Image (spheres, rainbow, N blue to C red):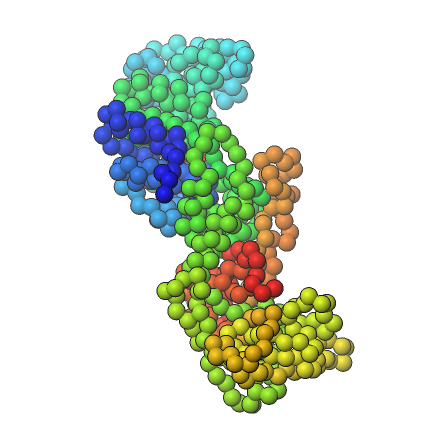
Length: 548
Ligand code: ATP
Ligand code: MG
Ligand code: MG
């Protein structure tokens, strides 16, 4: 097997290990607990944990919880569940909020070095003084405060003496810098808000740029990997670390994952939930990890997608069909084959003795030699798919038609003798005869039929509900569409089938079981299932049904 080419981050890590810059690496996955993880996060998870696994290092799970208003423990719990479900285990579970005291000390250190000041300007004034990319900003009179004044004011900010927005702490760097992030960036703002972990202890909170690099450094992260939009932040990341004289973590950037027909932002996904476009964060149409899991996606398929798309430095749009390809490939290998009739038409086999039944056997998975087989009851009355019968059939219709023969999968060949209709002319039932010598596995009939149909025996059929999903959005490139994304929602993203009948083997389904409903697609049990109704989600359609 040819050695896979390394991505640019693997090259960097190998170089750093070879040169002796590090003896082992530490990465981190740093979600903000303000929503559920989506498949974009999965890419970051696979990358960060994958690097550490490949090179014998470790990965921290660090909650980037520096913004009290949007964060919640519900999200913390879901994030932990999702990372583990994807197959990864962190070395340490950490919280940026645990470093609040340390961050405060860092800020005091910079004030003492004359590198930070308290500014009383309003947000508007600060923005106006910032200048433009082509014009330098102006430094205001507050920047001339003495170190003593700044220390006292900052302490008063912490003590709760001022209202939200009354003051900020800024780094004193360069109002003329071509990098806007260097124009005396805000380090701390006042926010009288309850924090999900620190409660009411703090009323000042650090900005992302004054928390992220410092957290990395405290944890001695060697390779801090983030998405491309943070490139302009990197000089500031380095500046704080250098001025504080702390462990030099390094930031590297890669392209975020975008998928066709999807939005990939927690803010937007949150809005879909809040405004009830979907039933929740785990709605099977959502590309959240929770949604994909409920839909029937496997961790393997998601990891495979991340592997396939690789790690690059230029943004791109990945086809949703690639994700579907990955899950089909995996499910084809592991899914148990079952028969479910979506839209039933009753067939009475007139020459099969009344009151009699028998068991036929069918393989659980022809792709897996270790998969066993199951018993399926067969009787005088079976359901077939309405669309598998045509009263006036075209020449190439190899399914059932008057006078025509088909095989019932793993059972017998039957022939349609008579069509029964109600007063309105609707077909209500077919009368067929079976060929007793044609039983699958011991067929001596010598008859060859082109069509094989799935079926369910009537007396033992389980009535169930099926949920068939289509894409949530109608637009391929959601990033480059002018309409508000809520106007791009596909109104037909969910079709519910309530008339379905399943073979009895499905009675014992568990949530982790994966099924291929023959000719119909891949399915799994949905959590809305109750004592009196089984509900299955279609994960993905089959590429081709067999014996169409
Ligand atoms: P969102 O815009 O969806 O809120 P975020 O970047 O604000 O995403 P975080 O919780 O901060 O969300 O993300 C945690 C990590 O996941 C970060 O390192 C971030 O770069 C990465 N990440 C987020 N979205 C993607 C994506 N689409 N592709 C790859 N990595 C991503
Ligand atoms: Mg973020
Ligand atoms: Mg975000």
